[in-house]
Image (cartoon, rainbow, N blue to C red; front, side, top):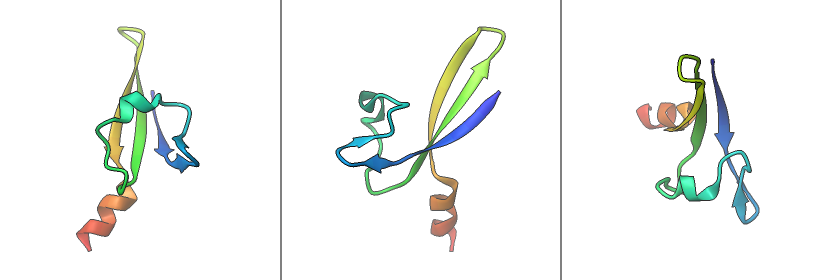
Amino acid sequence: MRFRRKIYHRGSSYETTIPKPLLFFIDPSKKYDAVFEYDPERNRWYIVIEESIKEQEGKEK
């Protein structure tokens, strides 16, 4: 199972699904997505932070 959520700035904080300390490495001038992946063998969820697909497409032009 895998799904993607946008990370966006809301007032003085970010979307509440991801604790802000986990986002210390992101560049605030770029847009990112959080990809949630479930590993059924280990019964664990993983969060992968990726640069937004739309942001990447804009760089290619």
